[in-house]
Length: 550
Image 1 (tube, rainbow, N blue to C red):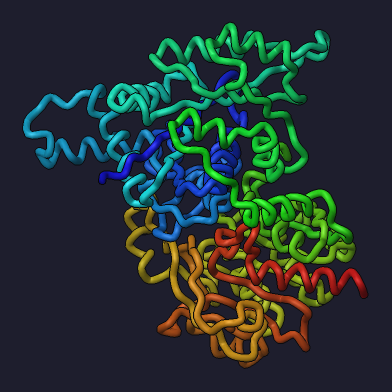
Image 2 (cartoon, one colour; image 1 turned 180 degrees about the horizontal axis):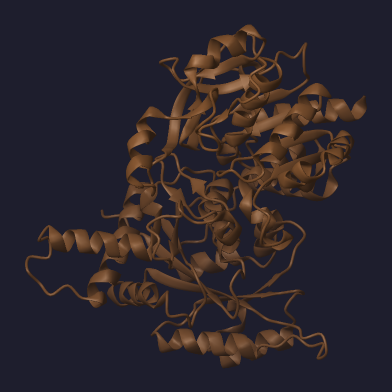
């Protein structure tokens, strides 16, 4: 018997940033805990083929999948909430869809037809959605359509959803997440913007099956009745989604209103028992977001600050969440401060402020800005024995700083910053030289999951508890092998290497020299999950807690 897959499209109304990604992740989690096999898809309405060339200060972090696809940060939310690994078939953009259709036309795959925006673009979208469901053997596929209803950019994706509903009316459903404002001078929650958003969706031939009312406070019965009448929905299909302190409370709130059972009923699926054991684990995890006994103060020294603090967390979202997971597992409450690396260049005296932190993280990044400030902070952390965790770019800072101040190579640098330096300790990867020569940047870095071998008797090996690991990468530059011998002779340990021994994957100082001074060329934050914290982040938080005790 052929498997019947259900499809839930999640769309947004009134404002951007209404929380569709977290909503989609939460819906997936509560359905998974009802015993359903769930996968998720993100549709971005950008012309970009992937998220790799987008500035993180404008779009948020780039999340890398195991197969190397550079995606929107919501893909990270899906993986973290659902505890699954997604692939490039689970992510699409306008640019990616158009590119595929044009390539098919050039290859005569349309057999001489006149290829049109409609229906061929929506049909390509539908084909991808169905393929993702088949690949995951999913009972339910949740598809988040980026943007806000009424925008020109996502019309073709809504058209694809409408066509899917027409083709299979009992298997395609719609959830609208819409915002209900409370104007300060009015003091009353207003439903009219959401009414208009639903009417706009109706104009595309789509009626939502569920309405999730986002707002500062819980939706009252009067507002629920108004939405029911004017949005053509039964009142029991209008759910409240108020602001919460932690996004990990959202699935709990949904289940308080019995949303998963309602979704199963609407989809024609038999009522399913909640997995009490899995649900208890999630509830216990969510409690830690509020109840950490002792704080650990972490300084995040970054370079993506130009557009203001209000989007800063999006630039390093996976790092922040990885810190939380390990802290909660150790019953600690992380307090993260954002420090701009350029401040240490302008005012070196500010380095002394780092003493008040229990740990320092230098996350990933590209470009020349703020490099000297990061190097100064790295040196300060090493000399003052403050736990230091370098992620990709942060490991490269470790190596450059060590080469300058321990090896005495004062002009040591990365080719990315100073290609004329006599001591290029961080060089462009051999495979990347042609890429840079021809400016073919998109999707061309060392991307995705690769193996590494960990050295016995090192902090990295002790943290993982195993010899071989697989981690996700996103970089063009690496430690220059010509300097490895000299660096190790002076005490820096390359505790993780590629299986062929050529690429340096982890660098560290021995613990009798420093409590935690470790960097990774890969991005461990991409594999941190709420119920499965990453071992390196956990070791780092332990070291931070140890410093605080002292």
